[in-house]
Length: 252
Image 1: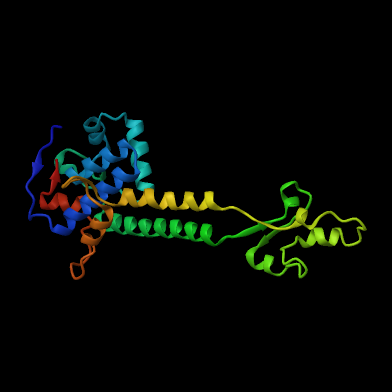
Image 2: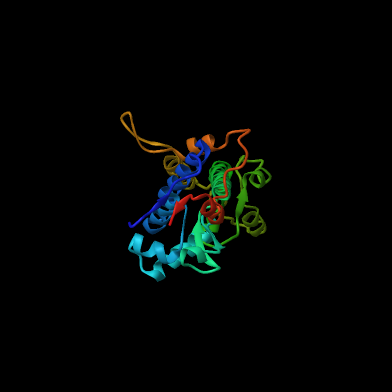
């Protein structure tokens, strides 16, 4: 890749190593190949100009800019304008990089929100019992009741849940239809519950480590989040290109 590294001022902390592994794992779990490659090259080289990244990744300039913009909107990458005159650049060269502290916080929040959304979907599917009148299905009436509402329309003679709209409609009918034609029926939400549980299972598979025998093929996002969250270590590095540049960290 025509890469010339500068020696680092000090070895990376465990926290930084775990942060890089977490960001790479999330990219592989949720993003397309172009985004994964771009994340990988920024983790490896710390900061790069977009015109350097294109040739390294064999990506057309338009596609590279589109991927960078997407990852910026996802809050995984940022850019900093750096005075690069001494290296043949300009006073405001745009260097792209990953702010480890910000990216990890974004990932932690999104994983939490994703899990909460899935848990709420499953809870709704388990608890959202609805009762429908047969006439509702044929649009003959608007008989749709929650479980609480159905408890309030019990027919004292039969103990059945009866659609009150149909009861009122047939109140003056000398020859009303059988009550079975407007007895409320419990809506089967098995399909919704199965879908909610399957979504939760698939996300958990993505977030957990992937093993083959005793070998780990992919680190677990849950595990890496725990390793990054070590009390007393302070915030992660922001990984600013200007700071790395001054300390001789990263790629020329």
